[in-house]
Each structure stands twice: as C-alpha cells, then as structure tokens.
Length: 281
Image (cartoon, rainbow, N blue to C red; front, side, top):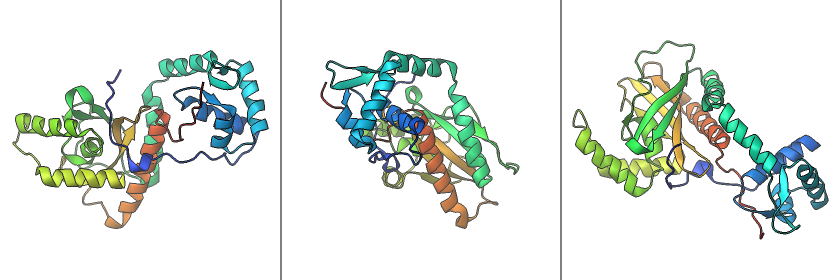
C-alpha cells in the first residue's frame, strides 16, 4: 500500500458539477448515481444527489429504493439520509483484490499509443524514495532510438516523467527532493532551483510537463500527472518521442492525449471528478 501525501491540486483535475449521461435509460441513471455515491466521504440525502445528478427527485427516490433493496445503498442514521451499502463495498473490495492495476493501465496506454502512434508510458511515484519509476508502456509502430529503463528508481528532478510528479508534491517534499539530488547525484548535476520552481509552477498551471533531452539524450517527453482517490499524486502518463521524429506542430496533440488519458487513469484510481454532495446524517 502506497503511503499517502497531501498534494497540490491539478488544474486539470478541478471538479465540475455532475451532469446526467446522454443515455437516460435506467442503467445509465443507476451508473450515474453509483458514481456520485462512491465519491462521497459521508452520508448524503435524496435532495443532495438529485441536485448533483440533475435528475428529478422522484426518479432518484425510485432508484435509491432499488439500490437499497440490493444492498448497494443503505439508510444512514435516519431514513432521510443514505450511505454506501455492504454489498457495494463487497463488490469494490473484490475488484481491488482480483483486478491488477496493470489490467486498467494497459488499455489506457494502448489507446493513447494508437491515437498518436508514439510509445506511451506510465511512471509510478515512489514516495519512500522520493523517486519515479517507469512501470508500464505500450509501443508505437516505430522503433525506438534510445533505451528507457524500467523498474528502476530515478530522480524526480529531471524529465517530464519526474517533474509532472514533483510539481504536485507539498513544498517540503520538493525541497527534500532537491537536497537528495545534491547529496546523491552521480554526475553532480542539480537544476537551478529558481528556474526549477518556476517550471513546476508552470506545470501545475498547464497540467502537463514538457522536456527535451533532460533525462534521456535525444528524447522529447510530454507527460501529465496521475492522481489517486485522495487527490494525491500517484504517477505520470504520456509520451517520449525521439527528437529526430518529433514535430512541433504535433505537440498540441501529444498534450491533449496525455492529459486526457492521465485524467482517465486518475478517474479509474478513484480521483473525484464530481463535487462533494454529502448531507447531514
């Protein structure tokens, strides 16, 4: 289990009011309600969820009754408020145990790689080591002209894979990473702190990191942050492209794809995309 840290909130992860899905059938409405329910940290009322879902109160009442009958939702301290039911908790626990994260990551990487026809990577944040580690990838149709090391902890201070994570750490952890680099850097390289802090601010504002040859000579990187269910930085996702094949006019496509697929993985990890609707118990 990864240790959780508080972190800055990405502009790309800002919450927005929930909207009903385009399909207004019963299954689609139940799915919407379940998404809203499991994102809450406490009990909620019928009025809360009706307002958040933009569904009529009678419809929400009927659906909550159906979910209650199946044990997916339960009444809280009073009949006027609800909470997650034991059956929904059991299902979620089984998914967590029986479905490895890689089964979720790989299809997202594959979709991004096919979209841009460049290799897409997922890099995992290692809090205990203040490091980043490439964990998964899906290759493009092109051959790579450089080697990316997998399952090896690397500095957070270099490359878009590390800086997309570093930018969303608390200030004291950023400073700790800088001091760690000063003590343990093999080649003695340490980025200028003033310029680094300015770039991290820019990454937070734009929601992605962009680098050229910082970690791997001849590589261009575009990676976006990935967050977990607590809003804590979890890793980064995006592309590395050989410089000789990289075209500036394709940069917006890489940015759009990296940020969208990173948000998709964040959502799969439980990062909230809806406002809190918890009501009084």
